[in-house]
Length: 79
Image (cartoon, rainbow, N blue to C red):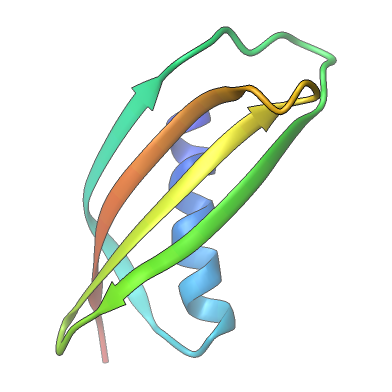
């Protein structure tokens, strides 16, 4: 589930700024446990945009601002 949330942060951000993309590659690092009924905070960033490729990152943090999981992705623009 965490990987899907991290992926959504990247692709949704792209959509919000006018990029129609799909995920071609997703690399996820799990850092800490994510507990049920605890708030998590999600952040996505576009690192670089190329002709057909978009490099993005996302991070999931807990209430103590500790990184729970982070991801790097390569998104491909579709028409």
